[in-house]
Amino acid sequence: MSTPIRRTPRHAGTVVAARALTPRTRRITITAPTLPPPRPAQDVELVLDDGGRRCKRRYTVAGYRDGTFHVDAVLHGEGPGARWAASARPGDAVDLCGPRGRIELADADWHLFVGDEASLPAIIELAAALAAPGRASGLAGAAGAIPAFSGGADPAFSGGADPARGGPKVMAIIEVATATDELPVPAQVSWLHRGDRPAGAPDLLQAALARFRAPSGAGYGYALGESRTVAALRPRLAELGLAGERLYLKGYWNAWDPRRRAAPPSG
Ligand SMILES: Cc1cc2nc3c(=O)[nH]c(=O)nc-3n(C[C@H](O)[C@H](O)[C@H](O)COP(=O)(O)OP(=O)(O)OC[C@H]3O[C@@H](n4cnc5c(N)ncnc54)[C@H](O)[C@@H]3O)c2cc1C
Image 1 (cartoon, rainbow, N blue to C red):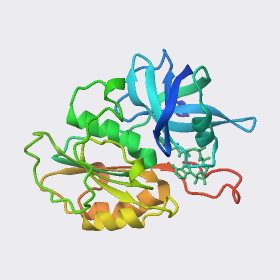
Image 2: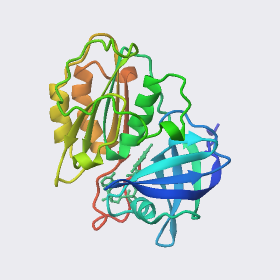
Image 3: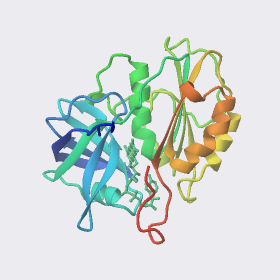
């Protein structure tokens, strides 16, 4: 017997606002009245135009209230998604599917997020949900409005309980190009700056993870970013006890050269 194909519902959206969030990230606010509330860090798949052909690109729902939500898109240069984000204007129509994604918060004494600019909206949504359990994902609480809990630059975490907050300890190691790409994350954050080096290489995150000391108790890890990079982090995450059911690992984008390849690898 064949397995039925599960289709994500499609929705008609309209861009209602667009502005720079950082020099390399643009916040596009979309209203799609039929889109139901997502779980934290679920995403929508936008149906975009790629030189006359349809293509789909996934973006985290960064804040949601009554069918209106933000997409915080990295302006990385090439690609239909980045081009759409750079040029989106109020009044533009955008078709989308969603909410999508299996990402879910787990029960743990501590949580470690590892990611980059593309996964920063998801990390913010998840960390905010951990900081305020039961908080509805809302425009007022979305990235940019959340107060910074840390933003420290030292990747050597001390570990241990967090008596000030009571709940689980929430930590993140996030690679961005420069400090201007940082956004408030309600977690103990170690920001890594790659500068002029190309995005999508594992070395900076690997080095920071090598220095990371796990707190006591049961941890849960989320590695979200360039596909080969997150795969390369797997062995060190396993050493920290973050493997199998204690790890959510997801490739958010693929580093590939559009001048040498006709299409991005699937996944
Ligand atoms: C569940 C999920 C949620 C996501 N949420 C977000 C989000 O909230 N915000 C966001 O910006 N992205 C997000 N992404 C990533 C986004 O879908 C990809 O980056 C997508 O490939 C961008 O499409 P594009 O058309 O701009 O580039 P593509 O056509 O895919 O690629 C063109 C070129 O750009 C390079 N490239 C693609 N993405 C990046 C990048 N991030 N940095 C540097 N180079 C890149 C490629 O390697 C390639 O050389 C998410 C992905 C997933 C799977």
